[in-house]
Image (cartoon, rainbow, N blue to C red; front, side):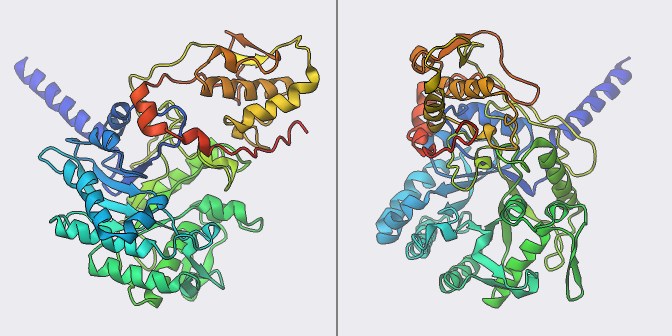
Length: 481
C-alpha cells in the first residue's frame, strides 16, 4: 500500500509540475491600467502566477503596484510615460532620482526582478508629429547612465519600445526596409547606444492594425495560415508578423546594427469595437502565433527563439479611442479577470482555460436601463450621447458585439455603461427621468451588460487617478442620429 501511495504521490507531483508550466519562458504579457475599475495588484500578480507568466511589461513604475511583484521572480519591464521624457532629458539628476526611487528601492533580497526600463512608449508615432523627437534619446542616455552608476547596468537595461511605423518599405518587401526619414538620424543614435550597452530593440507589431488600415490587405496574411505569401527574392513570407519583423532587421542593417537583439514588446488581437475584432479571430491569431513561437523557427532572417509580450492582460475601458474603438478590447482577460476564450499558449496543441482572477468582488447585480414608459422621449439622443461620452460605448460600434441591439436596448447599454462606471450611484441612473434600475440582466447572447467590480480606495487612487479624463468626449452616436 505504501508503494502504491508513493507512486500516486509522485504522479501528482508530475501532474502539478506539467500543469503549472503552461507559458513558455519567451512569452510575457503587458499589464495596462487605463481602466475605471482596476483589479487590485495582489489579485493581478496571483493571476500571473496561476497562469505561469514569468515576464510582465508595465507602462509606469507605480511603487505600490510594483511592490506586489516582489519575491515572485517574475521578470519586470518598468515603464516611463512619454510625458516624463522632457523632465528626464533636461537634467541627469532627475534620472538619478528616478532610478533610485523606482529601481534601487526594489532590489533588496526577495525584491522585484527588474530587467528593463522602457523609456517612453512608442514616442515616434507619426501621430505625435515629432513631439518627443528631441527628448527621447537624451532621456534614454540619462536613465542608462544612472543605472550604470548605481551598479545596476549589467542587470537592468534601458530600452525604447517603438511602434512598427518607425520603419517602412517602399515595395512592401522586407528587403527594402529602412527607418522613416524623419526619425532615421535619431534612430541611428538610439540603436548604436542600445548595441553599446547590450540592450535590445523593442518593437510593437500589430497585424490587426495592418489589416484594418488597408482595405486591400489580404485577411489571411494577418494570421498564420500561409495564404497570400510575399516573395522577397528567394525568401517567402507567409504572414505579416514575420515579414514585419524582418523588415525591421533590414532597417537595422541599413544603420549598421543587423545583429541587435529584438524583443516584440506588444503583439495581440482585440476582441471587440470593430467588425474584425472578435473572440474567434483573436483565438485564431493567438493559436497561430503560439505555434510559431513554440516551433522556435524564428523568421527567415532571424532563426531561433523569439521573445514576445502579449498585448494585453485586461480590457481597459478608459484608453483613448482615437486610433479606434477596438483600443479598449485588447485583453486576453475581461476587465474583471475572466478569460475570454481557451488558449494553447504552449503552442503544442490542446486548448486550456486560463485561470481566472481570484477574490474579485462585484457590485450588486443590477443594471440601469431605459424606462419603458419614459416621457421626454425627445431627450433620448442627447442623454445617450452624454452617457457614452463619459463611459465606454465601444461595443456599440458597427460590427461590434452590441451593434445589433434594438434601439431601446442600445440606449439601455449606454445608460448602464455610465451607471456602472460610476459605481451604481443612484444619481447615475436618472438621465432626465428616462432611466430606471432593474434586477433582471438585460444582456443578450452576443452583448454583455456588465456589472462592475468593487474597487478599494487605494487601488482607485493609485492606478486610476485621472483615467476617466482619457475617455474620448467625441464618441459619434451614429446609431442614434
